Amino acid sequence: MSGAPLLAWQDLRLSFRGEEGETEVLVGVDLELRKGETLALVGESGSGKSATCLAALGLLGPNARRTGGAILREGEPVWAEGVDHRAALRGRFAGAVFQDPMSSLNPFLRVGDQVAEGLVAQRGLSRRAARDRAVALLEEVGIPDAARRARAHPHELSGGMRQRVMIAMALALEPRVLVADEPTTALDVTTQARILGLLDALRRTRGTAILLVTHDFGVAAGLADRVAVLYAGRVVEEGSTAALLAAPFHPYARALRAAVPEIRAGAAPHPPRGIPGTPPRPGERPTGCAFHPRCPWVFAPCAEADPPARTAGEGRVARCHLEREEAR
Image (tube, rainbow, N blue to C red; front, side, top):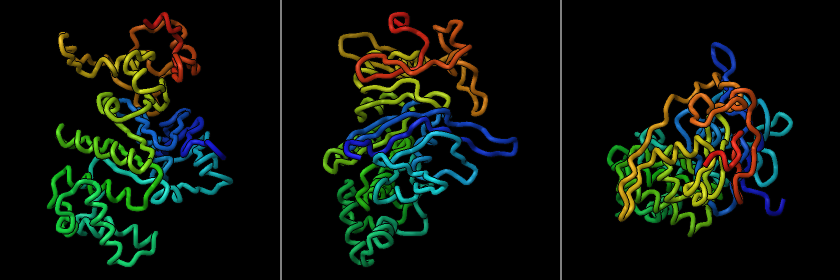
């Protein structure tokens, strides 16, 4: 389908099976990721960010079950007639970078061999050619003395270097989509900025679309073209990063924005403000709008009916019972 998004989630619903039955974790996710853009998924822990990504990549456990909706790759469903095509997305179409490289890298193998592994298995390169390509990839992601570092084990590298190795592995098969799930969580601020800069440079030079998972609006502001705010398994607001940061509409998006400290020249510092209450546990989603127990603008309809998606400005959609004027 010409012009179709690289990936699209259409009313995706997902549950996990446990000892006490099924727990719904995604309750109708609608998203699109297009070529060459960076889309950030923002929200507190448990909002469904990682599940949204892992569902597309087929990396959820056997206790996960799609209960409704679809995921499309360039307009074609990756689930069809009982056949799961998600494994075909991994590697050549989509690569992944996770938040803790020490949990993702094999501690017993040299990092160069781990980068080369996919090139041997999926591209059919000889081991020597794959190792040479691995060194070139390590150089591309900014690892100095890459030939020597390729012979190191993960524990011999710093956290920032390990994350760069993960990025090199994800890019080895030249994927069109890069899923970055909290890629800078365990890093110091300086290293975090370098990793985000690297991801943005790779997007611009390679044209790779990036799906960035983060709980930090500040990280999204520095990298993303668009932001989707998730709460309790659903997208509650989506729009361009600039518009959403300047004037978020949904009360939860506004609360997340206010939680980011802000320092501007010539102005008094804006200290971060916490969000009262806690997110609902999976499977304990309130009736109506899931955010209504924590919302400062709550009124009768909020607890009674799930708000429909509505336009909240050019290119922006939000799920809220408030009219735009009432929320200001």
